[in-house]
Image (cartoon, one colour):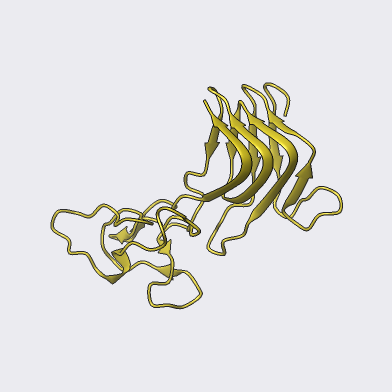
Length: 173
């Protein structure tokens, strides 16, 4: 992605001979001052973007994504580079189904922060309830972040996305 460019990979797009939301490149560079956004985010369905790069990925600009699986021989984030999955997980007010169902579940009333591998923040006078509990493995995350809860009809903001990087060589400056 050329310096100073803003590029959006739209939902259900792809590179040739790939499935929807799958991209394959020989090399992949995001230059300084450029912004790349994968429009597809996790939503409440945990839809995944697949980025497969044969040789190397170098990130010097900003890449915004939701749930992405990145595979490359070499992966480098330079000093000015940034990978951002903030607010790209569960929708406002939602988190995983703590009762074991497959569909996301709306949080009950209670002013609490988002969570994943640990409990979310809690008001000083509010008890922790069943849907406040941590979930997933903080050392090997596979789930999106849950939204904050709701209070007085207001929903918390979205949870965070998930980024998996599989590379033989990884450099973060």
